[in-house]
Image 1 (spheres, helix red, strand yellow):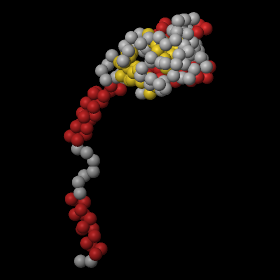
Image 2 (image 1 turned 180 degrees about the horizontal axis):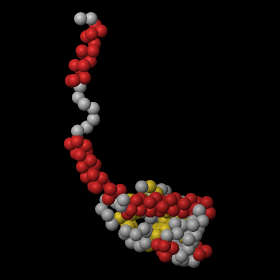
Image 3 (image 1 turned 180 degrees about the vertical axis):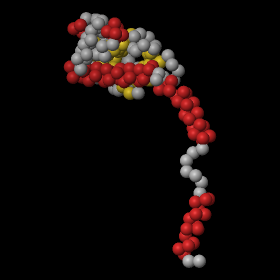
Image 4 (image 1 turned 45 degrees about the horizontal axis):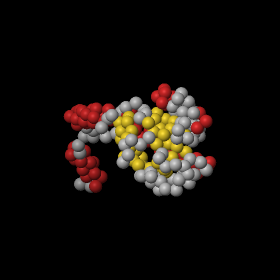
Length: 200
């Protein structure tokens, strides 16, 4: 037998031994069922708005605090950060945050402009004030009753009880936690005591 005749016989034997290409019906159905189960479990998590809102609001507050600190340094005057149960705002005076002359204007010209923000921020879209999105709460530690603080002209945070100008600050490192009504959806900001550094 010559080599030319042996080659076709060998390839025909290998062709009979090789499995068919593709998937069986059972494999396809099992894969589709598993994909359906996984998507049903994780699709609800993907479309929960509160978890995204918690992080987005946390980022907005961090940006606001950074801006307030830089503004205090740039203008050589105190900038007050006001917290209440449903918003965060920047002001030039602790007592008259609702007077338009004491409100810090948003650097881009307008806040988010949502109906919740306008309601919580005296219907002023130019004020650097943001409302807490629906379904979120904010809390502070170690002082749960914190209503605000201020940055002095050096960017150092001071408690509202510290008269301006003051050398000694009674402000302590504070953690602001923004929590969603859904479990596991929260975001925390830390405001450092001496430097006013804000980080997550």
